[in-house]
Amino acid sequence: MPRVPILPSAALLLALALAAPLTAQAQPAPVTPWQQLSPEQQRLLSPFRNRWEHMPPQRQQQLLRNEQHWEQLPPQRQRAIDQRIERWQQMTPQQRAQVRRNMQQFRQMSPQQRQRLRAAYARFRELPPAQREALQRQWHSMNPAQRQHWLQQRGPGPHPQRMPPAGGRHGGG
Image (cartoon, rainbow, N blue to C red; front, side, top):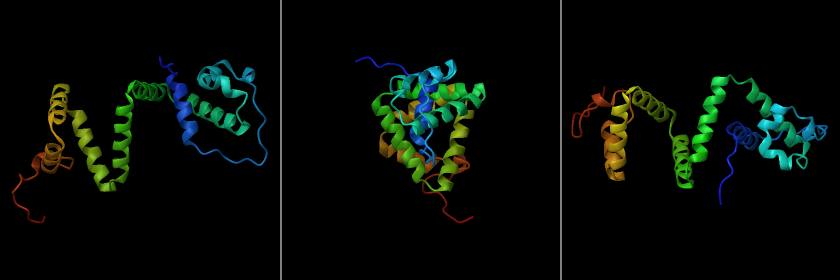
């Protein structure tokens, strides 16, 4: 069954709507008819068109707030978000599951571990493309035990190339 592509910006609105808690309001806002939305709002909210008239007013208001936030983002930020959403949509279910597992592992790290990982990633991004590709090929060719060994020897840290080799000195500093 072919997948219907979702506009990246509309997918962002969907993600923001699902992630943001609905706020309780003393007076529920009236339903906003689809025809009263601006053309730009209709474009960004197009994935919701068929359900719009049946949504609770609070849900419509949340989506409209997300749309306003989107409109205030600089164009460069909008493009970057669009690109990330597009990459996500192109991933297989297995790839998405792996990304979710990686994020869960990242969240479980200590702040120091996260900082070390961010620093290692920044160093990786500074490498020439050919060197990055070679490291990626090397990583993907390793089995889990080899990866663990590599991480222990040269993994994320302030200066992994300066770490003593296995069996090296273990004195305090």
